[in-house]
Amino acid sequence: MLTLHTAPRRADATGLFTDDEYARRRAFFTTRVTPTPLVRLPALGTRLGLGSVWVKDETARFGLPAFKSLGVEFAVDGLRTRGELDGVTTLVCASAGNHGRAVARAARIAGLSARIFLDADVAPSRVAAIAGEGAEIVRVAGTYDEAVRLATDDAAATGSLVVSDTSWDGYEQVPRDIMLGYTHLMDEAATAWGTDGPPEALLVQAGVGGLLAAVASWSAWRFGNQRPQLIAVEPARAACVLASARAGTPTAVVGPLSTIMAGLRCGEVSPLAFSALDGLVDAYVAVDDTWCRAAMTQLARPEGTDPAMAVGTSGAAGIAALLALAASPDVTLRDRLGLVASSRVMAIATEGVTEPELWREVVGEA
Image 1 (cartoon, rainbow, N blue to C red):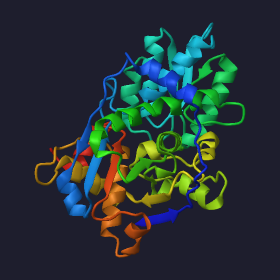
Image 2 (tube, one colour):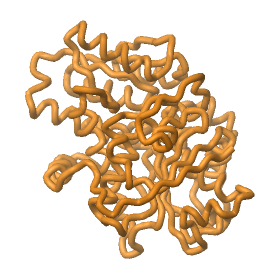
Image 3 (tube, rainbow, N blue to C red):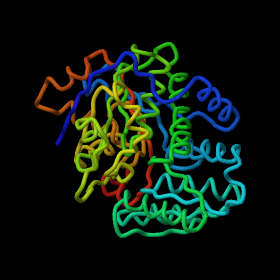
Image 4 (tube, rainbow, N blue to C red):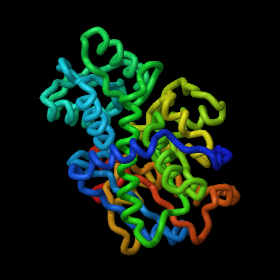
């Protein structure tokens, strides 16, 4: 299954952040981060009829198997600088796994406790990883979006501090800083592009929209209307950003959000993130789990001399979209996205193996 929605590009769209904010983010990460690799997969590019396929490998950022700490560490530093951690003993958030572990790690480093609300579908391995950071776990019978509301209520009742990557009325600074922190991975990617220059297309996971809004904003800031095509990727059964783009307003997806792409199992887009997408995202693609499994296997068992990559379900979403587009009987889809034989494309492997049993089930003992 493949669903595609295209959107008109706006030359005047600028994204969320100012020059001063980008400078603040650069200053923060100057001595705190080792760049993650940009992996080139020439054999996959040839197979898909593309010029190049690059993957920004975020499977081991800061010793954690996901990119989320880029945003969380930057946002927590902002809270500290503004004095908002004074008197706080506990950080609270909802999570599908990776964000919660990043918050738990940041809390432990800061000498604080953490309480992480996890929806009913979060896998035991993700729960154990968060608990291993010393966090208190609260299981929620409902969805991730219900966990967000319960975490917010809990923080208000206990005097704890919410560190959320999604926004709501009156709560924007922390998710804004988290998204600004995410833009650092694009600075790293641009350095790795070198004289090749930027790709013609970027495939980015949507989720609640945070990473997508970060990449969209950075691309507009860096390249203006000459920016790469930006393609948002979601699971077919949890495509809240695609639904919102079609409606022109934040629109919730109801019903069972059944997908193995756990980090993208979201029914509601972040309003702040969504405000940055209009005119900056060129296309929204939703794929089913079959393509996710195919992408995980392709990355783990590559062709030719391509390096093997151990990438988790959500992390493989961008490659899943490329595989689905290449296999589509509708040959106009790639044309509509400007994907031609000379195109260079970049996906982001946003997580590594966060669910080992599922990964082995999909790819075997690769």
